[in-house]
Length: 258
Length: 248
Image (cartoon, rainbow over all chains, first blue to last red; front, side, top):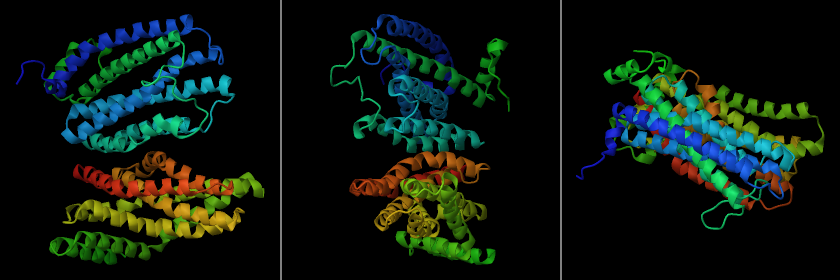
């Protein structure tokens, strides 16, 4: 055994709770700084697009939100799968903590897409393959949360919702490749690993910085939410009681003791 | 009727539990299939009310949007498919609920035969008792909507390929929600998103035919979905049933 960090040690909520608390401010600050920088690049430095005018600037929110909606679903399904396989409590809590953020990102992607579609395509919504599959993704997130909420026994809820998340994974590649498989109104990918990007450098930079900001934001709120879930579910244990006592009353999560 | 049901349960139990070595895997699935079909035959009202629902929903559309033949012809594939989808959804909560209530489901979980195969038998019985009649009556409704005979045939074939997928995928959410209070509302929320691909390609086949295009691609995709669901869904349903019953 090599001496060093034992990652499995953090699978215990008791140890992960303080770690998440220490990491959280860093991710939150990074999200704020990157967000300001990304918006500055996107709204001030980036040039006006030759075809779409100023309306294109919505991509600085739209594209990162759409990316995150898919990434979070994969992460959620991954944690749910780990929870089913290893039967670890923390994995299922992570899946639960990711779902609302993922749903928010999906909603943002759809909403900003509609705002962009009106001036550019002349319509708020089209029944195009990518839009439809993204809408299905939103339904999958809602289904996950609804199923979890409907089952009172938390362990059963974790496992049932986890299985549902794994079944829904088939939708993610469909969204991602929808612009390739079907000839639809939604444009193809502007950024890829295999070819040079088809956009000006400041635009690309702004988008990537904003994407990083979204990553940091999602990680920060997920950590915050998973901390609350840990306190709620482990409320009967000694460490959770101690953790609640040590927080100022105003920021203390409302937890019912059993 | 309960007496009849108990004897069927006993027959299954004696076939599967008392002589586990002699009842093969497929025989177990066949036993479940026969039992569910017999139950469906004794409770014809369930099957017929799903059929009546299908016919009524379809008949509401011409009243709602007006009887213009051209409009109806273009709407027919979508309307019939959505109605079939909803009718299937209506019958799904009962797939495991009754067996859960009288304890048969726990017997199935304990049987010597693999649970996915027994589940396949149950799903097959559900399809025969709930969907097959919809498929058979669909050409008649298609003619009411002014579709040509060949388009009605394409519609029936697409339903024949697509409705088993609806039964298989719906069984997953039926298994996940078995025994829950809000099961039927939750079922719609969980199932309908997963039905969307079947709806798109099923209705798309008829639209492609009406537009004079080939329907091979649509049928191939429907067939692919059927094979995928046939291979994957019983395993997922079995896992979901174990989750639902283990901690209940």
